[in-house]
Length: 150
Image 1 (tube, helix red, strand yellow):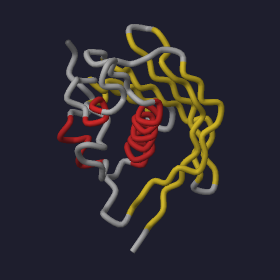
Image 2: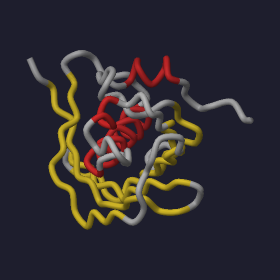
Image 3: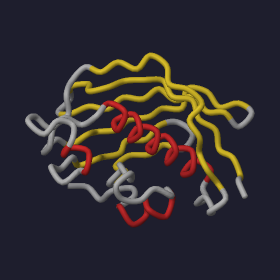
């Protein structure tokens, strides 16, 4: 297996999220200002599986979208070549065209892809896709912005 572009320790330096919301385990490919490929290993220990659904655990769609948003934020931060400080936050501005095509269950490895479609005036639009074993689980266009707070 090839060495990851960014391991979990480096991901945690770039994203403010922590358990149970940190949903990116590693970055495996990166092209500045263009695209990123990251992984999320889905385990039965995820806190949402206790209620979604106890009889048939399925990763909630909103959690898949959050994983794609975190991947997109990593693409932007890595493209800028700097780690955000505690006053930098990436906010969702919009989610368009979200389509869920496959369930994601414990044991799956979610491959998270994001491409910058447009970047203008601090607003980024990404084309994103999450897949398992080559099958699309979800695809969506995400819009985000980075802001200084505090």
